[in-house]
Amino acid sequence: MELNADFKTRVVVHSDQLEWHASPMPGVDRRMLDRIGGEVARATTIVRYAPDSKFSAHTHTGGEEFIVLDGVFQDEHGDFPTGTYVRNPPTTSHTPGSDEGCTIFVKLWQFDPDDRTQFRKTMADELGTAVDGVATAELHRDTFEVVSYSHLDAGATLNKSDAGGIEMLVIGGSVTEGDDTLGKGAWLRLPEGQPLSATAGENGAKVWIKTGHLVHAKPPAV
Image 1 (cartoon, rainbow, N blue to C red):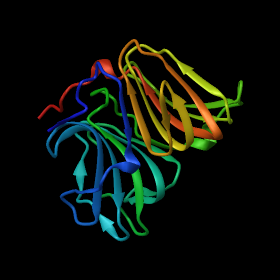
Image 2: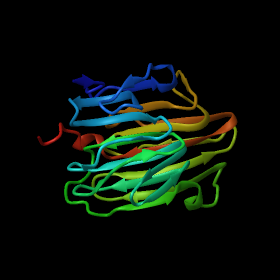
Image 3: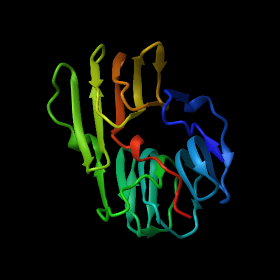
């Protein structure tokens, strides 16, 4: 399967307008944003766990990172409430689920294959002092990518021109980027060489951003 697999084009997806599709596990549904591959895929997805649902135990051969968008995600390593950012690098494993139900934004097979750094962070706790109405937390940096989280005051503008492509998920509020208004759940991917200029709406915005990674994009090694 290929979905939004041309990394040289600009892509906007309003995920809240997509239908949910069942995964192989009962009670776990998905909204696919981009994908190369079948059930083993380089993928960016919104995943919803119904209350008391679980996914089978698995190893992250290509790595997994996720943000808890609502509810509490759980595995044998602990509870991960709303606003948690998690990196599970290649070779890690777990049995995910949720007692109360949750929704996560998850990316698979998009790690440096030599990365072995596993961590969790509460994104809001990492925020620095606001400059021109924008407070930012750098969540992760390596030779492949930079991952950040920002709070924008109403009317504030976040500009980025990082090499290697840019990806943004709107977690709260709204932003205007180009001719598009992106509300909660909207996902934007900009190709190499195209800068980001996102201006927050009247209620401000919370955004997650990854840069530098698109030039490394390739199918999973299976």
